[in-house]
Length: 393
View (cartoon, helix red, strand yellow):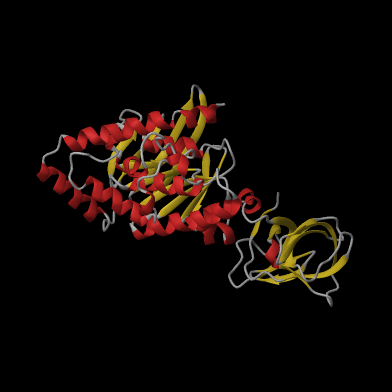
């Protein structure tokens, strides 16, 4: 119900931001407007963090929703807050946009303080654009008019700016149509064009692809990344979809229980997870009991494995070994056998869940040509090229 309320109020939030931006822009002299454009262009080459969130705390009534959260976004970077529903990621987005008060910490955009416990800059003054989950396009306005909504119509260049944005999202030919005549993917691209038109320093995207089918979601997420990169526009995406996050983002923050557990590149999150919760959440990893044999080797039920880098634990220490599906390969000559307990056909490959002799469960992805069946005993081996271990649970 709360989520629905947020979606219904998208138009209200949109009007607050764009009407404020319009009034601010209209009140400036031509010289001031020219200086503002130059400032935005210069900021594209700034070394200052576009977004800085420090020790952020937010509550709904008396219930903590976001706790001790800090992260930063560099110019031109696309960040993502990834986590399950209710973990606090949308609350952070709303706090950045100015729709959610904060109880502790501070938020800066391009080095300027926009929110703290004692200070809250109005949403229209934050130089932040927002793309909503439900698009929030005005049904009575044409595509062109929707994109122009946040621009100063007295500015003779506003229509040209809107057309340029439509060309960037490859929908200039639909400028006279209305939202109900567009597909879901086209509507989302119009919403992005509208958010980009005023040249904000930061774009916020709240579950922007969740209303689209799987194939369209994949293609549009790639398109959006290309558009943002071409414009050198920084952005924060909120999603619960791992594939979407890894496709779009340069940096990802894994959110659990109101806190960012780890903020880093997709590679770092996958290959160097900060804790066992992240390891289990990302990439369908399993954790097996293991023992550190030397500074570079570990033994488990899967056999001995070597690490190219020194392991973080002491020799002889009992640990848990992270096993990814791609680490397990079929090997007919292997003495280690595993029983197939689940099978999911994925086209070119099959996802299998396997039971080891000890009863431990692991998973693997193998070519569908192998076509193993439920109950089959197959030879396997551990072929990881990157060893990750955690303290014993």
